[in-house]
Length: 108
Image (cartoon, rainbow, N blue to C red):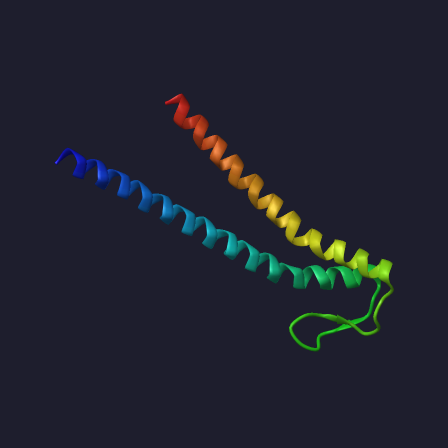
């Protein structure tokens, strides 16, 4: 009987760990999808800042004439900064909230 309770505790811990791993993977996939969507306004902003005329032929904005390699690299950096900044802001508020809740739990 004692061994059966130990097995059930181990099994419960394994299931909780597997559920946690699946939830973390889903959260990462959701954030990656959000970052992919944030690249669209990032590209629009980058083309506008770099003075590149663009149009909307399909899913992504596209320059009317292909820019050179250095301008393309600058556009990519600017476009990637938009999701990176928003991720940084979200992480800052998430970690700030977590740290403040940890402090309130420790003080009570």
